Length: 206
Image 1: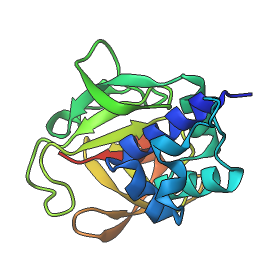
Image 2: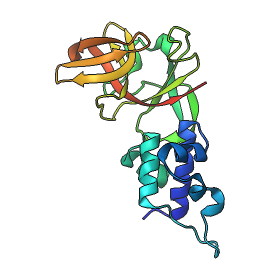
Image 3: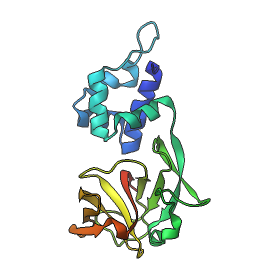
Image 4: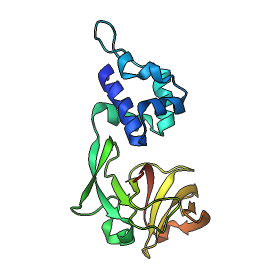
């Protein structure tokens, strides 16, 4: 079982990953902020209290964190520095392994709160072309091994080197339908024409 202190630390990480104070995350989750305040986390005998399961479930939902991701956070299996590829270079399919991770040694970007996904990397938006959806210096964390579901943000590169960022509408064994940002045009692609295709579950504003 995870220690109570580790569970509280993970709640702080949930807020850090969203880029907001814990009190703001609590309000968005419908949780009384005072109930998870630092001063309310210990008993009078200085033993750690445990947040309720209902509170934790609400915080996970509000932060968009799955139970598996949270388990990695609370167990300490996190990466706080991840490799990156600039958007201006992301169309080069030689950057990617067959499983979607990045090839070779690369510069890394520090991520407050850490990321729990194996082989995760950062897509660094180094252009103004995606304004107003993404400002320059926005960082999208790409998780190559995570399942992609309807509504998930995704990062896709075709075999022709075309980069697409948007969200999943539908996929079959042979095709992917997505809404592309920033135009919000719906496009359909055959999977045989895609070099890499991954969920992008985390966004860090500049």
